[in-house]
Amino acid sequence: MSLPASVTIVEVGPRDGLQNLRQVLPTADKVRYIGLLAASGLTAIEVTSFVSPKAVPQLADAAETVAGIRDLPITPIALVANLKGARNAVAAGVRRLNFVLSVSTSHHRSNVNRTREESLAELAEIVDLAEKIPGFRVRASLATAFGCPFEGQVPIAEVLRWVGAVATLGITEVTLADTVGFGNPELVRQVLLACRDRFPGITCGVHFHDTRGLGIANALMGMQCGVTVLDAAAGGLGGCPFAPGATGNIATEDLIFLCEEMDVKTGVDLARLCEASRFLQSTLPGVDLPSRVFRAGPPKPRGPISE
Image (cartoon, rainbow, N blue to C red; front, side):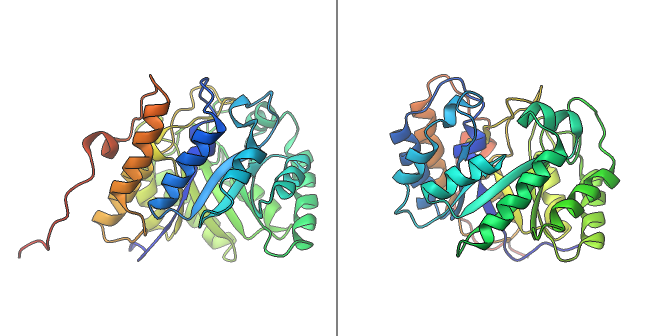
């Protein structure tokens, strides 16, 4: 297996990174934070989530955040879990949505308070809505694809079932998410190759959490399996409020360092990305950013290795 020449990093810090924090970041600071992320070269940024403000108070200002970043040279992405959220996102001006659906029954009920079949029906309506709006795109994010905090191991056949279910609706972009960090490189390899073999027309991305220390190893395996779209959160923040034990995403700084050191191009300036994380830490006193590269600092440029 070889590595891709380049990858797209989907920055999820403003959404997944912040949603689990009790301290609410003011809208102006969120806008500033997203601007700094954009200045580093990140172009695909999940800026917020249009969900119930009671469930996720941190993102109650979703529409205001989108309005504040309208002039940035990025593709703003919003996470939604139902048709109402999708309509609110469209009204706010978002044209790229990430629809979340859990592979496991228990986590899906905990996360969005409905069955997977009910959510699939709403996704079908969102796809219909997308067909009426130029430039509108929807990807499906399948949570707990590598393990569930309630049910434990998730069979690969169940993952394939739900990839197939969203594919039948016309979805061509699917992100497989390791919501609580149960995945390991061998499991990642098996799941991704099974998806590739069964659904060659689907572009699979990955979303890893570093709960048990294997996030970056899993990301490397994903790239070796041909994945070119990877989620990450600046500073390594993150976690699902409705999944016991869920902790931070793989840190964008660490993933960029891995890629660039292995000659996989990302288009991101690591030093400027660290500035974005530094700003976030300064506005959230007491919040620890676990990114190893952020703590150590970006490496100095170096010449070719001598033979």
